[in-house]
Length: 248
Image (cartoon, rainbow, N blue to C red):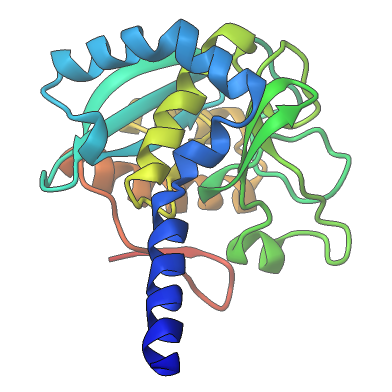
């Protein structure tokens, strides 16, 4: 009898834990509640226009530093390909084209990342953290001085993050909460120096002709850019021992 009661208590506890969803936890914060109050109808409208369901949503974020543009892509879990939902302008930027290689260089990272933090009490209203430094950064960057705390956030100031204003972060954060709540544990974020078509890459090669390491890095990024651009599906990304990305 005691064992039965113990098992019942255990399963009841597991059920309650599962029922307390990520979205429920996020809604405990006033800024997240405000985001839903102000942006939920627009988010639903954007999804409906693409035939997407918030209860089955997965998202992908792609950013271009030269164009100061952040794209939001989405699909239903059962879909193969992503669709472009909307895009947001960078409110401002910092640093130059090229990857982040050390703390304090003001650079916005370039490479293949994912959201690893939701911050509902950010200094910049709401923020989504990316997993910089990733495995490639840890090989190619300045050891012991890589820096961290890179976010997509509100407001209009930056020293290496991507600000999109308070208004737009409310919307983007809501999309991310919905996707995470649906079980998308890693929301991919790909950051490029520019839209890496052949014309743009050639322009970068000419502009940075004396920096072979940098242009070779961008050529490596282009392989990942091309995979998604041509298929609207995400590549599986791994990192070689020399720090370069490999796509499968």
